[in-house]
Length: 237
Image (cartoon, rainbow, N blue to C red; front, top):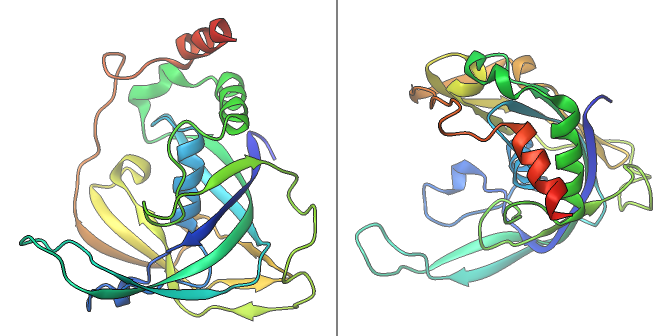
């Protein structure tokens, strides 16, 4: 696929929090990563507001295992409380994604050079990403590296189908949709032979508004054009 990237992300723990469990203060992870979590990982490898990251599919490489831990989260009013968080443990995923230009940002038309963006993204992946990589939450640090999607043996390659019920797909931000609303998307994922194919954000039929929100404005004064960034990276090499 055009402007695509394939990578492996792995770590000892992951916490893709089911929002229903946040009410009681004791977090429980979904069994699989959400679209939004994988989008965030891809954006940690390389992102600019000029781009829209689209996650195409994820392959679950390791068996799905859970582990509970006693934690002492900080309370809003100060001090600590006691809680049990249930994490995924020993996780590894293969991810295929690509980027498109954000056509809802005409203010960034000067930064649309897909060849240079793609080259920088691949270079950033080889270096382990431009920002910290984590699986769902900050305490679940992870690592990324290039891979060939579908290569190697996965834990669920021989399992025809697994349904995961209703879960969060991702968040709609005003800068990406052109609407002045912050929205959440819901869907029902199915894993077939270890692979989950994501529907695109605009294909989600279950969308709920959270609140009003305006997009942040960008221009040449607060964003570096990709041409300058590409030249700087070339000089560093």
